[in-house]
Amino acid sequence: MATVQVSEAEKVYILHGIRDDLRADGRGCEDYRHMEIETDVVSNTDGSARVTLGHTAVLVGIKAEIGKPRPLVPNEGYLEFFVDCSANATPEFEGRGGEELGIELSNMLYKVFNKHCLDLRSLCISEGEHCWLLYVDVLLLQCDGNLYDAISVAVKAALFNTKIPRVHISADEDGGKEIELSDDPYDCMRVDVENVPCIVTLCKIGHRHVVDATLQEKACSVASVLVSVTHSGSVTCTRKVGGGSLDPESIFEMIEAGKRVGKSLHAPLMKLLQQEESLGKRRQKVGFLG
Amino acid sequence: MPTDNKRVRGPELSQSPALFACKAAPVAPQQGPRADGRQRDQVDVRPVFVRCGLVSQAKGSAYIEAGDTKLMCCVYGPKETERKDETDMKCGRLTTDMRFAPFSCPERGSWVQGSQDKDFSLMLHESLQPALCLHKYPRSQIDVNVVVLENSGSVLAHAVTCASLALADAGIEMYDLVLGCSIRQDGGSYVADPSYAEETYCSSDGASDQGRLTVAFLPSLNQISGLQSDGEMSAETLTAGVRTCIEGCYKLYPVLQQALIKAVRKAGPPPSES
Image (cartoon, rainbow over all chains, first blue to last red; front, top):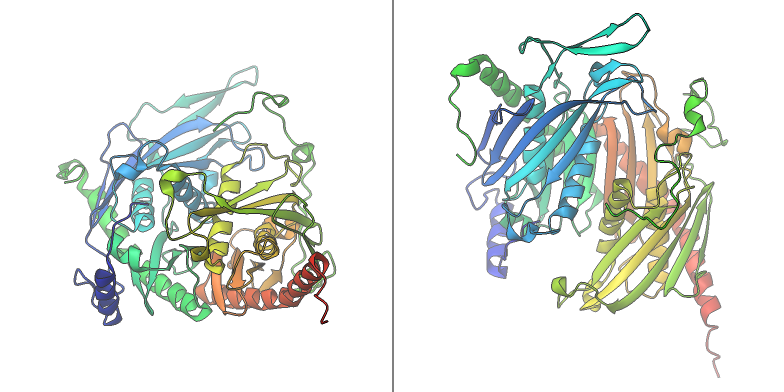
């Protein structure tokens, strides 16, 4: 993770501010930074989204390919995640530096975006033989804390934007099956993202916890809790990260706060995505780092 | 991913015969006692067997057995750190490595460490680190290696327990032991310390509150050092689950204390009073 040097005096300043529910950038403890979402940003993908959260910028591209279903679940397609921490975001990621973080992030994505939230059966083409395989590639363009939340929102937006072409299976006289791709570019299948959760990261700083911590705030925190919440408020995944330990009571409070914040995140996000979708080609494109 | 060319790896693609079995889905009963006779909705953890100091070459080691879940842990160090570039002058470094023996699960695993093993290693690291006085070991490294010999559920929880025991056996200064406990939530009821079948069992679709939860707990400080859950649960169920896990951890505590006392006694008889 990208790190910043924070002096003792700065730490005390941040801590005291958070104690009084006022953070260095003027936010309250449960406020997000300004978030920008744009979908359909890369033309070569089947679905893509760009999310900026403060100075954190994430780009997600989804490619759909036809593969063989896993033997254990022959009637379901699946998702593959890869997070690339390129040296663009911070020089610490150069070479193999970002690999560990990349694995950590992609493992978390596997856990969060699983069969509980997506209808994987709709990705099946013919049982046991062919299924859709969604490659979700996440690119970190800029790092300024709170990667998990930004990535989860970006993945949800990209899944919403994903258009999988329809295929028809025709059997010839020998019983062999042939896959036929629809010619019409508008004849496509969408992924139902209704139940897809968002991750909320809560950082314990002092006696309180904050949502969407910046790098400076992260440096003051001993441990954080990730909570992934669906639109109905059920928790699909939790995880403690960081080197410290937490009091059971504060964990309960953080789960409760995560649920509250996550639940309120979904409605505006879906509204925005639908609004952008309805604009169609008339929408003005902003592009990366814009 | 580094591949190991020296080992004969068998055919590229092979599948477990279990996949071809006719699928008479083993429906775990929703009510009544569990397959191994334990009770549902109670903190009925499997009795554990623990021993310290079994590996002679390691600084500290521990072996734990809970039902059919068997794993061992070795601790090496503190020694000079290998990665000079990341040397922290003030603090020691903890490295954790958790591996599954290829034959430990019903499906054969691979020798190279998969992403699941790495994930477990990371969680082990996060659970153990708060308990260690790493500031007492500047510029040095402590290695924790866990090998899962047999996986019969709740592996991560027992790995945490076993690793903290091995660290204590190695004489590494710690604030507290770390205990792990996990539960499987299945609708309105839960099972503590689930077996492999109970852990992987998928209940019918649409049922709410399906999930797994693992907690690592420092009993005398009353702190949670590790928390990991997946599945879909309401916040209330999750909170109740964490409380259950804490209770489960307290049940293990005296067993570990006894094992440590035994190991210390064996290592050196008390000096005579004369």
